[in-house]
Image (cartoon, rainbow, N blue to C red; front, top):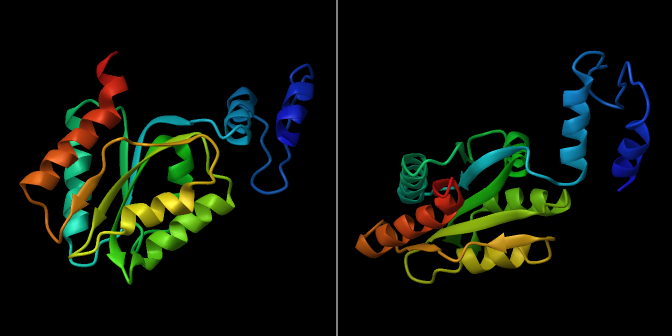
Length: 196
């Protein structure tokens, strides 16, 4: 809110340089950077698109995430980004979750909860005030699927977070039923893009 108030006051000023507390001093293309500050401070969407964040133990959740990525692109999503939370920079993954308007979380049930890298990722999102997004879930487990419920519970106090109607439930590996759920999720996430 303080940044929003400052941006309103600054709108009437002739700004020649931006000297942030961290990062480079900016003296060119200031309108662009001021617009980014506006988006970031209001938790707005920087880029239309979908970010898929996954963890996978035996490769089957990864397979589902990659297949969803293909389906989303085939349905005309403007941008699809994907990351393996166990192998990529966590800060970059958090950045992508805030950049795009939609987030897909795909992980395995692990000790009746979720895989540790996914837990850390969601904790970082909530610590940074994650909000104003649509979130979808892909869960994998051999017998007691609890990952989607756990992830929802971790995000339930986030402001203006909408959970996708469709979820994907994988019992170890994709089958006909979970493939159909993947199709339904892709269609739901891309529905607004197909109307244009």
